[in-house]
Amino acid sequence: MKDNWKEYIKKNLKWVVLFICLVGFLALTEDVFNKEIMQGDIIGYKMISTFLISDFVTPIAKFITNFGGAIFLSIATIALLVLIKNKKIGLSIFSNIVIITILNQLLKRILRRPRPTEFRIVEETGYSFPSGHSITSMVFYGYLVYLTYKYIKWSLIVLLSILICLIGISRIYLGVHYTSDVLGGFLLSISYLVVYISLIKKILSEE
Image (cartoon, rainbow, N blue to C red; front, side, top):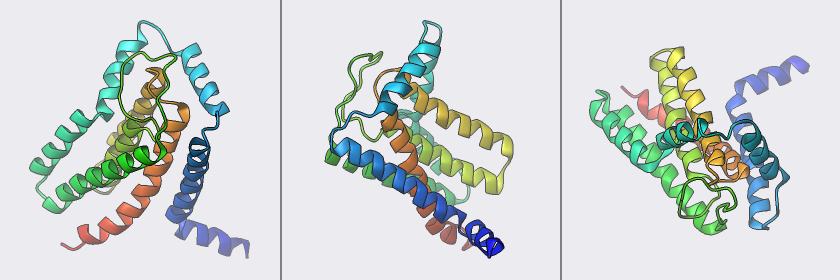
C-alpha cells in the first residue's frame, strides 16, 4: 500500500506541485483581498534589511532586478523568437510570456494592493500583488530551464534558477514589493508552468 502511494506521487509529482503551489497562492491572495497584515512581510523585509542592505549591494540589486523587467524580457523574447531555428519552440517562448503578462495584469487590477512605501529605494508604479517581476522571471526563465533540461545542460539550469531567486529578493530589497508579493508570484508562476508545459510539450513533440 505504501509503495503504491509512492509510485502514485512519483507519477503525478507535477500535479502535486501544482496543487501545493496553488493552495499557497490562494491563501496569500485571501489575506491580500482581506487587507490583512502578514507577519511574513515584516519578517522578510527585516531579514533582508538586516543582512543585505548596504551601499555596495544596492547597485547590484538594481542591476539584477532589470533581468525581470518588461524591457529586458521583451527584448530577450523577441531575440529568441528570431534566433531559435525551431520556430515551434520560439513561438512557445513568445506565447508563454504574453499569457502570463496578461494574467498578472488581470490579477493586479482585481486585487489592487498598494505597493509598500516605507523603505522604497526605487520608484515603481502600478499595484503590488502579485509581483510582476517575480511572475514573469519565474515563467520566462523557468520555461528556459525546462527547455535547457530537455535540450542543453545542467550548468545553465543552475544559473537560471539562481537568477530567478535573486530577482525576487531584489524586489523586496528595493522596497517595491512585499515578501508575499514575491512568494505569491513564484507560487502562481510555478502552477502556471506546470499547466503550460503539459500543454505545450505535446505541440513541441509533433515534429
